[in-house]
Amino acid sequence: MRNNFLSLRPPIFLLCALLALSAACNRGPSQSGATNSSSATKHYSLKGKVVSIDKLAGAANIDNEPIAGFMDQMTMAYAVKPPAMLDQLQPGDSIAADLVVEPDNKYWLENVKVTGHSQTPAGKPATATDKNRETK
Image 1 (tube, rainbow, N blue to C red):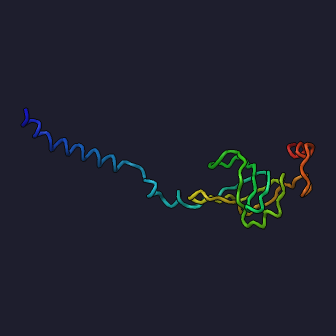
Image 2 (tube, one colour):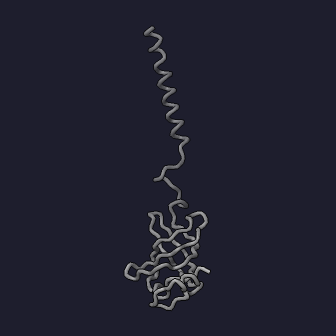
Image 3 (tube, rainbow, N blue to C red):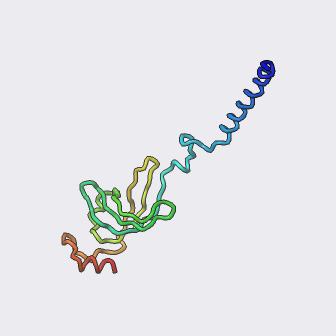
């Protein structure tokens, strides 16, 4: 009986080695070996409404529309480049911009354009009537 087991050892070892090699060859690309297309900076078109502005942080909270292939509708803070563009924005303004997303999850807005101005004058807090008018 012992001789039969010893005679099976090399084929079993060979079979295990082939299975391991086959599994390694059939794996998809690893994260470290990702192609340039998946690790490149990506650009998306963003449309949304300015909720608030934080000039000290160089950012604006934007309630953005869904971005096809990237994210659902949400409100979040976006850095704005150049930061001087923040001077042109007011809460309630509708905007269009380029969203730039780097592989390390850094993101910001460029080429920000106001597509509709807020109904509230700058520096004046929005009243319930103003907010109602903006949603219509």
